[in-house]
Every structure is written in C-alpha cells, then in structure tokens.
Image (cartoon, helix red, strand yellow):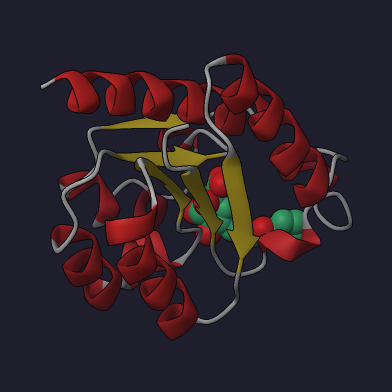
Length: 150
Ligand code: CA2
C-alpha cells in the first residue's frame, strides 16, 4: 500500500457550505474530503484531509508530508497569496505538489491572481468547486505513480 496523499486546506475553509455559497457552494469541507477520498481510493491511495486556520500548523503538516505522504494537495486559501514561510516549507519537500482552489482565481480580484504556491506546485486545479479537490487528488495520485516508477 503506498503512502497516503495529504490534502491540506488553509484558513476559513472550515466555513465551506456555511457562508458565501454564491462563491464557494453549499457543500462542506467534510463533503470535499469524502469525495477526494473516494477518488483517491479508486486510484489506490488513501487520502488524509486536514484543515487549519494557522500558518504554522499548515507548515508542520507540510514537513510531516515530506516523509509520510506520496504526494501533497494543498488549498492554501489566503496564505497562497501571502505566505513566503509556506512557500519555503513546500520548497523543502520533494514529493509531487498540486495546488487546488475552489474558485477560478483569474475571475476574481487581481490580488488573488498570484500565488506563491504555484512556484513549487506541479500544477494548479481551480474553478471547479468541490470537484477541484477530486481532480487535484487524481493528479496527485498519477504524479505519485510516476514518481514511484522513476
Ligand atoms: O477558491 C479557493 O479555494 C480559495 O483558496 C479560497 C480562499 C481565498 O482566499 C482564495 O483566494 C481562493 C478563501 C477561503 C475562504 O473560505 C470560505 C468558505 C466559506 C465561507 C467563507 C470563506
């Protein structure tokens, strides 16, 4: 059994389904984790989904993923646009990284168009609502397969 895929979500995403449904939809983060876990299982990977509102906690989980995960999917939320500390943590790991966002950042305010995470992610999945999480886990599983064969 390969190591799990870590699926990390940043600040305020615990409110998913409870506020701003016109932007982020009506389903919850638990729903997103369940869908992502189903997609991962179909591809032979377990998925560990976690959310924190705290930058340092997210960084600790990125460090943990370095040795404990096959690949990392991260929706850094607002920290993606601001956190060099998170970027530095991501730079220190060699497993595949997939960046994930619910909304299409290009359709939103200019300050959301740039993320630091995109500098180290293999690619970004955004704009598909909860489906972004499923698609990002699929990409991560395929990248992990390729890395295991290399
Ligand atoms: O589209 C995404 O997934 C974002 O990462 C969400 C972040 C935002 O700062 C990024 O630019 C794009 C915000 C997460 C806030 O989540 C909420 C969910 C429901 C209600 C209120 C906030």
